[in-house]
Image (cartoon, rainbow, N blue to C red; front, side, top):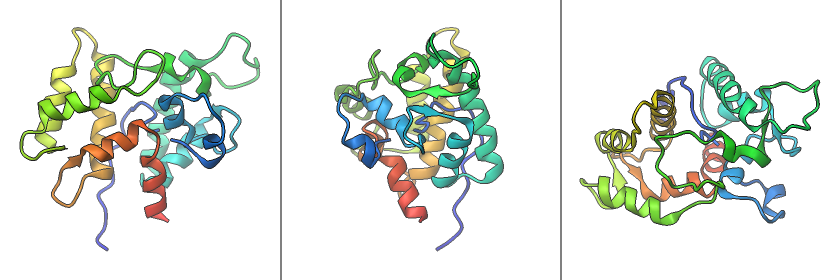
Length: 203
């Protein structure tokens, strides 16, 4: 196999990111966004530390430097937003609490997760129907960029940066041989399967 191009180090939502493990599969009641993030929770305690984010990013294909920089940005941005009032005072403020991950959602996104972190399939359908023009159910890099611009909210620079980083990393990691991002691949991000698939391919 040829060498794979490494995704850029950039802030991203634990998709960014971010998936359903066998232990969590047995537990009901998790939203798709929680399942998405649970891939990184190695010890299954409901908390994603910096080290766990780093290891998860390494497992899906990022190099050591990119993974460390991205993990620092991810946990620093999302951890404080998800921290519960009763959190242990000795724990890091960078820890991400899966039960509150919906509080870490950024603006200028696709709307495919609702306010509670539940997957909205109609939004995924709408996204590809509107922007996948070259081939049905698949987006080129240019079409992906067009989608990101269309989703931008006014004066939401942080949201623009987060969305761009998420989708560009997804594209770099999971585009097909023709350079397109398939709809089923995007669905696997939202329903919590893609990171496990990528980690499995990496071996």
